[in-house]
Length: 263
Image (cartoon, rainbow, N blue to C red; front, top):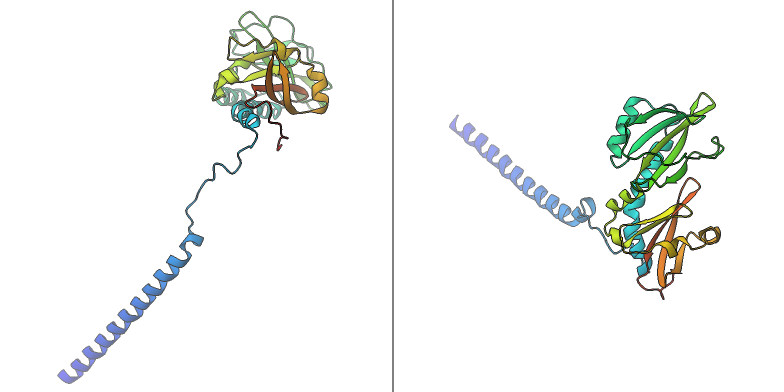
């Protein structure tokens, strides 16, 4: 009996030793394979911050300053134009949560009579009637700039319908100068609405020479470029809210450098 026990223990020990050997080999192979492939399976992410740098210093400056401003404005116009029926209260609540810099929201009927206004008693009053002229089945947004005593107010109107019939407008308003809060260097950026005004955070800058540029002619052929105004060189790009142009302008870093935009 002891001999049987001895042989059993010997066999068990041999199995344990064999298992350990197999495990060590397997672990070694697994570790080697992991070390060889880990960079492919689980790579360390890197961000190439210079990959998309614009070579033109004028374009680079303009892109850095106008992009953070244009983004919120574009988001607002998309959100507003998505609503084509009388807006419910919960939509209004979400609207002001997403865009707390908007001053007011107005709903009018097709004859221009005010049906609702949020808030009911806004800080700024409309100084003169807001005139929107469009074929509302073809035009989904239109802008008007008003100039009350408390400063400019930018109104964006979008149509709402009852069934297939045009029923009125949903109009959001805000001070265009609030957009400079999104700009990393607000004193260096100018926003121009041809025939509507020009706005900048730099109170010492005379924007009249920029406003006097023949923008209607310029925009017939170009969407960006350089102009000379007031004895200075400026780099600009136009963005549209529906059919209405809004031009972002910065003073050129290198007036001699001229290149085409990538977009």
